Length: 228
Image: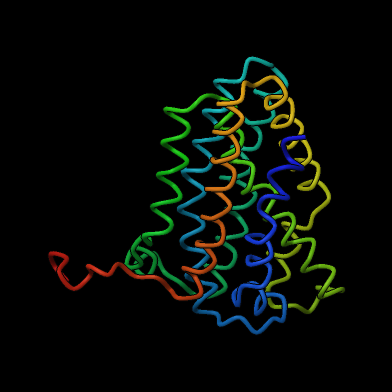
C-alpha cells in the first residue's frame, strides 16, 4: 500500500520530528511561550494556503464523496483549528498590531507556496499525497504526546494536544489515507513516484516548520529590507 510505503520511507524523518526540541518541550509543558506564539501565528497563515489546497482537491475530485471530504476538511482548517489559534493568541495578549509586526517566516512561505504550486500544476493524486502529511504527521505527534502526558487537564498546551489527538481527527486521517492508497493503486509508475516525492517533501516541511518556530526564524535579508 502507498501509505505504508511512504511512512516506512520517512521513518528517520518522522523520528526526527518526534525528537525535535520543540515537540519534546511541548510534551513536557516547558516550551517557551514566545516560541509557541511564533508557531501559532505562522500556522494560522499556513492554514490559509492549506485550506485552499484542500478546496482545490475538492474541485478536482471526480468522486462526490471525496469532494465532500476535502471540502469539509478545508472548512475545518479555517474554522475549528483557527479557533484554537485565536484562543492562544488571545491568551497571550497579542494585539492586531503585534501580529502584523510578525513577518511570515521563510519556511511558512516555502511550505505554503509548495502546496499552492502542487494544487495548481500537479495531478490530483499528487496533490492528495502533498496534503496528507499535514493530516497524518500531526495526528501521529498528537497521539504520541497524549500517550506521554496522560491526563492533559493541567497541561499548558492541552488544547493543542487534544485537537490533534481527537478521535474525529484520526478518522479524517484514515479517510485521507484511504484516498491516497486508492489513487496510488491505479497510478502508473511515474505518477506514483511523484506522489511519493510530494509526500516526503511535505513531511520535510513539517520538520522545518517546527524547527523554524523553535528558532523563531527570521529572514536573513531583514537588515537590507526597505524600511527596516
